Amino acid sequence: MIKRLAAGVMLASFSLAAAPASASSGTPPSKTAADRCDRACMTRLADGLVASMVARNPGAVPLTQSYRASENGVAAALPMMSLWRTPSEALAKQYLIDASTGEMFIVVTLREGGPTALFWGRLKVEEGRFSELELFLTRSRADAGYQYDADGMSSLPTQWTRPVEAKRLMPRDALHIVGSSMFSPKMESPAAHPDCRLMENGKIVGEEPEMMAFMLPEGAPLPEERLPDGSIPMLCPIVPERPADPHARVIADAATGLVVAIATVEGIVQPYPVTTPSWSAFVPGEMVAHYHGALARANATGKYKSETIAPLPATIFVAQMFRVYDGKVQGMHLFQKMSAPGSRSIWVSTAPATAIKPKE
Image 1 (cartoon, rainbow, N blue to C red):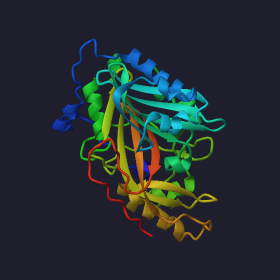
Image 2: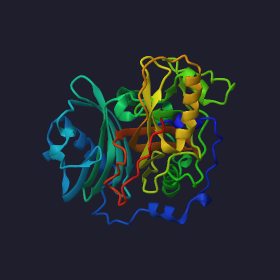
Image 3: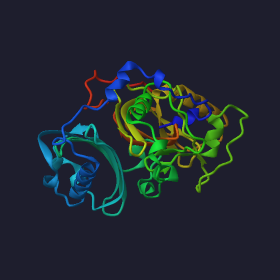
Image 4: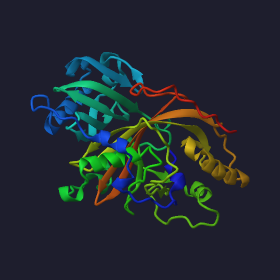
């Protein structure tokens, strides 16, 4: 997603007072000791789930008598899914666990014969069994919307991996409010640390310098920092113009400072003309006008002659993850799966989404 567009906008400060009363829904229900599956239990279940995929054995997954499951937004029983047909090896893993609610978010790099892919999703555990499995498999940049590197999960920046003392972490309820703000533009957002870098699907987001010049105000200097491929790494853009989804679901892991919000966002697949051959980029509806301005400036140069994709509507399923400690967002990572325009999540009760029409 093109969060990069607003990288120069000033970040808002975060305060608990800014959260609406509904944010209290993040308080977990009480459970008896007999019902609770603790962090170690949930970790074992997640490990077993991934192992069952590699073994092509969905029957090994402990499920409740009546469970809910989807793959890439489509409801299906586990034995029907590609996730139990294609993986040959599990590589890097990242788990976000809230044992108080029985929910977790997992990201795993899977090898499928030769190529690697990103498996990610939300799981719910009840009495030691999975009752909900909301699963996604992202295999390419087209799947992801723009940036993608499944192998990047094995070498995350230190902001994601360094141990942090408990006193530097937020309490669970405060962390849940941070998650609620991700797709609620009317809520104040936490500030980002100056070293926070935006990631998408395993990769630090890098903007091509030529395209960045068109996105910034005319005459503004380009940042000096560069990634190994020569692109410009993007700061974490926590801005008022961010996409909105009132039905985003939040999972907070107070033990690690990780929080994720899972949402559905409408937008446009736009041309990215400065590369040869030209790329495409998913742009959320809230940011289309800004991107059109950058495209107009690029096209006005007459420099870019490659064939480009025409703008087309699309929907993206996205899980946006923060790592928060010392009161700031230290890392921002988005996991994404493109879908048809007007798609909606089967996990929330809403009217069908209205697709955004592309502007030629």
